[in-house]
Image 1 (cartoon, rainbow, N blue to C red):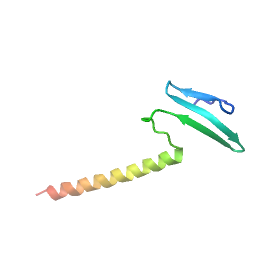
Image 2: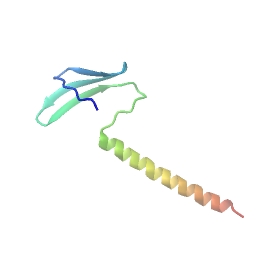
Image 3: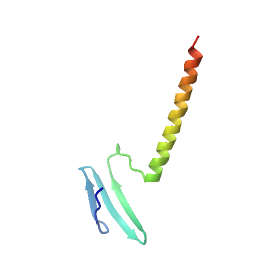
Length: 75
C-alpha cells in the first residue's frame, strides 16, 4: 500500500486514466472525487462487499437450480 499526503484540491493519478481529487477535508472526513473510465467500477468498500455477497448468493442459487435440473434429466 502506498500512503500519500494531499491537500484540498490536489490530485493523485492512477495510471493515465484515473484521477482522484481531494474535494474537501473536514473534521474526521475527507471527500474524494474520482474520475475514471466507464468500464472501471468505483465503489465504497461496504458497497463492493455487499455486491460480492449478493453475487455469491445468486451463484449458489444457480448451482442448486442446475443440480435440480440435472436430477430431473436422469432416467
